[in-house]
Image 1 (cartoon, rainbow, N blue to C red):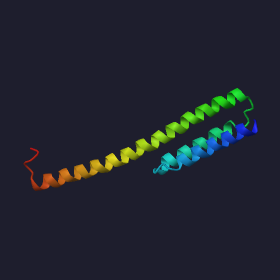
Image 2 (cartoon, rainbow, N blue to C red; image 1 turned 180 degrees about the vertical axis):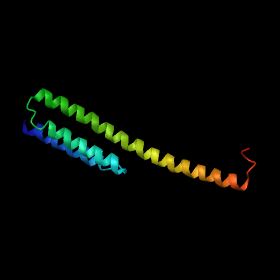
Image 3 (cartoon, helix red, strand yellow; image 1 turned 60 degrees about the vertical axis):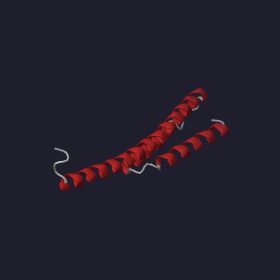
Image 4 (tube, rainbow, N blue to C red; image 1 turned 180 degrees about the horizontal axis):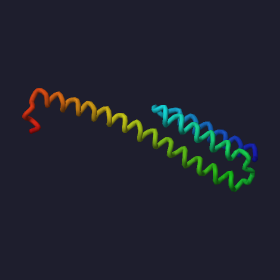
Length: 102
């Protein structure tokens, strides 16, 4: 592997690990980190430049997926907190005005 190619692979590896560490849920975070490490270890002896480029393209797509997934999970957390507040509010209203929802 050429030196510049090696540097690009290491940069991509670090970027993927760094992004995966932003998952707030432990299970998502540990799974992503484990899968990234396993995939890079599995392909560390690849010498064919075409195959290396294909693997790098796949890793770049996966990095994009990781970034989008973080946003989706953050949005779900906000929505679930809002929903919990909404349901708590309905429960509060229901206890004080029982005929409102009948």
